Length: 231
Image: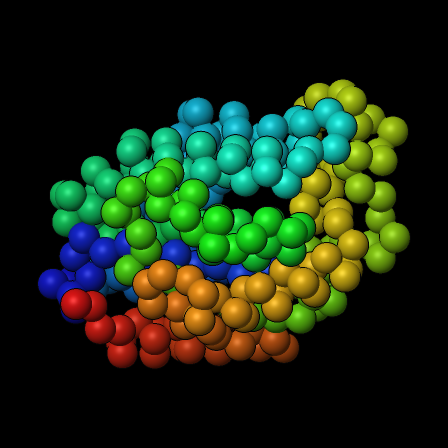
């Protein structure tokens, strides 16, 4: 297994509340026990420059951001992440685990009307040949995901919040620009994630995370890992 995953790039993704961050930590622990050196990171962010872009995307923007601007900012963060973190780790034979990647932009900005083929084309320009060897999507209904994140059905978005034009000292006190979008928007996001098996470059696997405990989802992911084949 150590040779199989040496220098590989794996992404965990899915709708808000799907549990991908928890599963990434568990997968990292699993690999480490197998003697595989792991680098964990997240998208957007993962670098000083990327974290600044992340804050702008999620909390700091004043006014309504155009979907083209969103997409370009996400890609800029990824370009830095690949250059600074992912590519050097892969070149050293480490296994990179990333929380979200271009697959998220396909789902979220795709749901806002940005053509997925253009997102993928722009993504390839941003990251070059550093594309995930395996992308695992944890699928859950939008309603369940929002319930897990604790969002209230009629919670105001960041744009409509009374402090929208002020900096937030504690970011988690107000839902970010994506968490706070409508239920219908999050339903579209889920549909786009489910379409990635056919549309997205590289290997994409879907894991059903609905009404499933952490251990059950982990077992499904480890099954995918054990069956993974790279050429």
